[in-house]
Image (tube, rainbow, N blue to C red; front, side, top):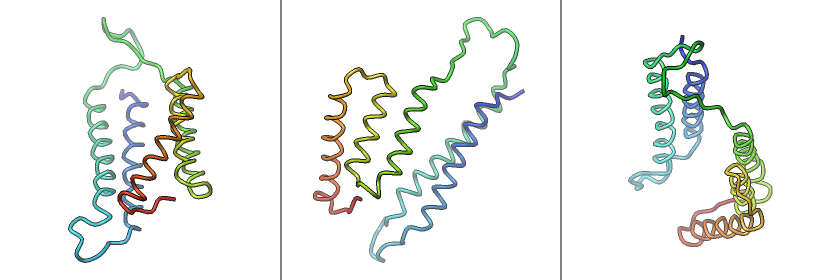
Length: 151
Protein backbone atom coordinates (compact mmCIF):
# COMPACT_ATOMS: atom_id res chain seq x y z
CA UNK A 1 0.00 0.00 0.00
CA UNK A 2 1.38 3.43 -0.98
CA UNK A 3 1.87 6.06 1.69
CA UNK A 4 -1.17 8.24 1.12
CA UNK A 5 0.27 11.33 2.74
CA UNK A 6 3.37 11.39 0.53
CA UNK A 7 1.33 10.76 -2.60
CA UNK A 8 -1.13 13.51 -1.58
CA UNK A 9 1.78 15.91 -1.14
CA UNK A 10 3.11 15.03 -4.58
CA UNK A 11 -0.31 15.60 -6.14
CA UNK A 12 -0.61 18.90 -4.28
CA UNK A 13 2.74 20.10 -5.65
CA UNK A 14 1.67 19.12 -9.17
CA UNK A 15 -1.64 20.97 -8.68
CA UNK A 16 0.19 24.13 -7.58
CA UNK A 17 2.36 23.89 -10.69
CA UNK A 18 -0.67 23.51 -12.95
CA UNK A 19 -2.40 26.48 -11.29
CA UNK A 20 0.74 28.55 -11.77
CA UNK A 21 0.87 27.54 -15.43
CA UNK A 22 -2.74 28.67 -15.84
CA UNK A 23 -1.88 31.96 -14.15
CA UNK A 24 1.13 32.52 -16.41
CA UNK A 25 -1.17 32.43 -19.42
CA UNK A 26 -2.70 35.69 -18.17
CA UNK A 27 0.68 37.48 -18.28
CA UNK A 28 1.20 39.67 -21.34
CA UNK A 29 3.71 38.47 -23.92
CA UNK A 30 5.88 41.60 -23.70
CA UNK A 31 7.52 43.57 -26.46
CA UNK A 32 8.60 41.85 -29.66
CA UNK A 33 12.25 42.67 -29.05
CA UNK A 34 12.37 40.94 -25.64
CA UNK A 35 14.62 37.91 -25.78
CA UNK A 36 13.09 36.21 -22.77
CA UNK A 37 9.96 38.16 -21.91
CA UNK A 38 7.93 38.37 -18.71
CA UNK A 39 6.54 34.82 -18.96
CA UNK A 40 9.84 32.96 -19.01
CA UNK A 41 10.68 32.69 -15.29
CA UNK A 42 7.09 32.07 -14.17
CA UNK A 43 6.99 29.22 -16.71
CA UNK A 44 10.25 27.85 -15.30
CA UNK A 45 8.91 27.96 -11.73
CA UNK A 46 5.56 26.40 -12.69
CA UNK A 47 7.23 23.66 -14.74
CA UNK A 48 9.60 23.04 -11.84
CA UNK A 49 6.65 22.45 -9.52
CA UNK A 50 5.09 20.00 -11.98
CA UNK A 51 8.36 18.12 -12.56
CA UNK A 52 9.28 17.94 -8.87
CA UNK A 53 5.77 16.84 -7.91
CA UNK A 54 5.85 14.15 -10.58
CA UNK A 55 9.30 13.03 -9.50
CA UNK A 56 8.13 12.80 -5.89
CA UNK A 57 5.02 10.85 -6.92
CA UNK A 58 7.10 8.34 -8.89
CA UNK A 59 9.58 8.06 -6.02
CA UNK A 60 6.73 7.46 -3.58
CA UNK A 61 5.22 4.85 -5.88
CA UNK A 62 8.52 2.96 -6.26
CA UNK A 63 9.46 3.01 -2.57
CA UNK A 64 6.28 1.41 -1.30
CA UNK A 65 6.43 0.49 2.37
CA UNK A 66 3.84 -1.07 4.59
CA UNK A 67 1.93 1.57 6.51
CA UNK A 68 1.19 -0.69 9.46
CA UNK A 69 3.59 -3.00 11.20
CA UNK A 70 7.04 -2.70 12.66
CA UNK A 71 9.48 -0.37 10.95
CA UNK A 72 12.78 -1.83 9.79
CA UNK A 73 15.65 -1.36 12.22
CA UNK A 74 17.10 2.15 12.12
CA UNK A 75 14.16 3.69 10.25
CA UNK A 76 12.48 6.58 12.03
CA UNK A 77 9.10 8.16 11.55
CA UNK A 78 8.67 11.92 11.46
CA UNK A 79 5.54 13.71 12.54
CA UNK A 80 4.39 16.95 11.02
CA UNK A 81 4.99 19.99 13.20
CA UNK A 82 1.48 21.43 13.03
CA UNK A 83 2.44 24.64 14.81
CA UNK A 84 5.15 25.47 12.28
CA UNK A 85 2.91 24.39 9.40
CA UNK A 86 0.16 26.67 10.71
CA UNK A 87 2.49 29.65 10.99
CA UNK A 88 3.85 29.10 7.47
CA UNK A 89 0.37 28.75 6.02
CA UNK A 90 -0.82 31.83 7.88
CA UNK A 91 2.19 33.82 6.66
CA UNK A 92 1.44 32.89 3.05
CA UNK A 93 -2.28 33.64 3.29
CA UNK A 94 -1.74 36.96 5.09
CA UNK A 95 0.85 38.05 2.54
CA UNK A 96 -1.57 37.35 -0.31
CA UNK A 97 -4.43 39.09 1.50
CA UNK A 98 -2.42 42.16 2.51
CA UNK A 99 -0.42 42.69 -0.68
CA UNK A 100 -2.99 44.80 -2.58
CA UNK A 101 -4.48 46.81 0.32
CA UNK A 102 -1.31 47.75 2.24
CA UNK A 103 1.54 47.13 -0.21
CA UNK A 104 4.64 45.02 -0.59
CA UNK A 105 6.66 46.23 2.39
CA UNK A 106 3.96 45.64 5.01
CA UNK A 107 2.75 42.33 3.52
CA UNK A 108 6.30 40.97 3.18
CA UNK A 109 7.23 42.14 6.67
CA UNK A 110 4.23 40.31 8.15
CA UNK A 111 5.12 37.20 6.18
CA UNK A 112 8.76 37.30 7.30
CA UNK A 113 7.74 37.76 10.93
CA UNK A 114 5.35 34.78 10.87
CA UNK A 115 8.03 32.61 9.24
CA UNK A 116 10.35 33.44 12.14
CA UNK A 117 7.57 32.27 14.49
CA UNK A 118 7.46 28.98 12.57
CA UNK A 119 11.20 28.54 13.17
CA UNK A 120 10.71 29.23 16.89
CA UNK A 121 12.66 32.47 17.07
CA UNK A 122 12.60 33.93 20.56
CA UNK A 123 13.23 37.53 19.57
CA UNK A 124 9.99 38.91 18.09
CA UNK A 125 11.01 42.60 18.27
CA UNK A 126 14.31 41.98 16.49
CA UNK A 127 12.50 39.83 13.93
CA UNK A 128 10.00 42.61 13.23
CA UNK A 129 12.77 45.18 12.74
CA UNK A 130 14.72 42.86 10.44
CA UNK A 131 11.53 42.03 8.52
CA UNK A 132 10.81 45.70 7.82
CA UNK A 133 14.45 46.39 6.85
CA UNK A 134 14.67 43.41 4.48
CA UNK A 135 11.28 44.11 2.88
CA UNK A 136 12.19 47.79 2.42
CA UNK A 137 15.56 46.89 0.90
CA UNK A 138 13.93 44.47 -1.55
CA UNK A 139 11.26 47.04 -2.43
CA UNK A 140 13.87 49.72 -3.12
CA UNK A 141 16.06 47.33 -5.11
CA UNK A 142 13.19 46.34 -7.37
CA UNK A 143 11.41 49.68 -7.66
CA UNK A 144 14.36 52.07 -7.78
CA UNK A 145 17.18 49.79 -8.91
CA UNK A 146 15.38 47.74 -11.54
CA UNK A 147 12.47 50.08 -12.27
CA UNK A 148 9.85 47.41 -11.60
CA UNK A 149 6.56 48.33 -9.99
CA UNK A 150 5.72 46.43 -6.81
CA UNK A 151 2.41 46.88 -4.99
